[in-house]
Image 1 (tube, helix red, strand yellow):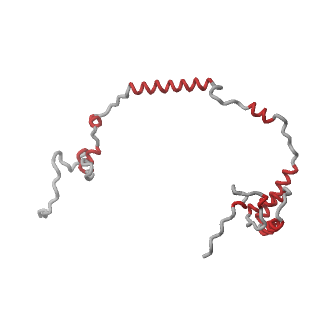
Image 2 (cartoon, one colour):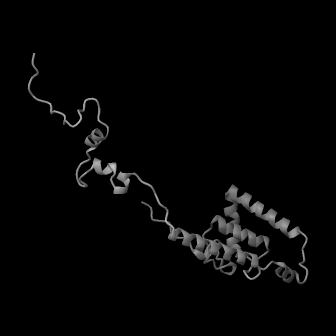
Image 3 (cartoon, helix red, strand yellow):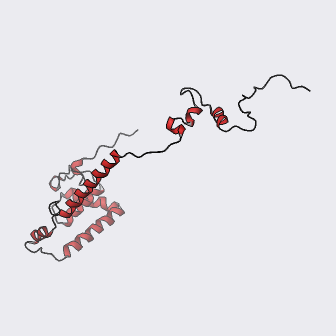
Amino acid sequence: MSPPDPKPDPTLDPLSDAFVGVHNLRDDAPLSDELCLFVESLRLDERELPPTLDARVQAYVAERPELRRAVAELALHHELLSTAPALRVPDGFAERVLAARPVHTAAGRPVLRRLAAAAALLLAVSLGWELTHPVHTLADADTARGRWIVDELQPDPFGPLEIDAALRERLPGPLDAAGEPAAPPSDAEPPR
């Protein structure tokens, strides 16, 4: 059983919130793809790097084809961005944009306030009407008395369901004599 991998130092991971930045890069920093891309971006920006770390990163990148492609794309993007013409924002641009945006307040929209007040009034009137004029429902006699077929299926709430008896009472078949209980089967032999 091998020992667990040591936890990477978050101060050396450019994607970590605890990253300490360029000035604290050490020559002996453990290499990862993210750290190599970060070092390559520093090289493209012509920033000063620890010489041993720079050599280690170049060797690390040379061994990995996917990382070499990522570094080549990074260099291409850097070149495209650095050769683009510089654009200058005219003076007062931000102030003009902020002044031109519409103001979204309730005071600025009296139509919406009136519409909301009308909807609230309509809701209050309809709710009051419904509470003072209940709907009359028509029900058959069994429903009005609260009798349900379920009560016949299980007369005792803790007893077994008596589905056969309840259904025979509601829908008697041709073998059920009206008002006579069915005779239990006898164990005696039938006459010959």
